[in-house]
Image (cartoon, rainbow, N blue to C red; front, side):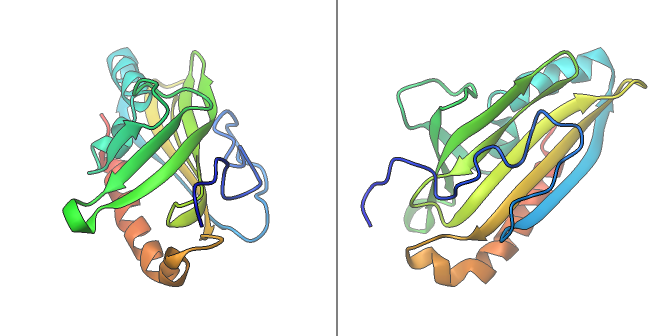
Length: 175
């Protein structure tokens, strides 16, 4: 299929990391969203805010994240990264692009979208935020469908199972 520079889906930013309430999703995707409390107070907020901006949810969950465009590891809109799951012959490389970033007083996170060559098609968002009671929360949002082309398309049901395991690790990755 060759190297395609763009995203493998049309709905850039559909996980809305800046929105406290997630609006309707585009049709044809499996939608997943959950929020967990990960701690309390300013110290926790500062630590997890920094961690999410450096891909720590992914990295602490067993993935390797490498900038693919010459930039640094810190999340930046338009930044391209290669995420690797597994090792050696069993490594799966996932090209992504950061499609949205939020960084406010009470909300920090980003959404990454799949690029051509990724095993699935869609978007994933990692958002940390805090409430008025001082709780610090992690919200995961994802939209997933089979890749538009390539050999992974036929393994989509297996990839959904792997995604369940990854989500469980994400929810335990912070602080």
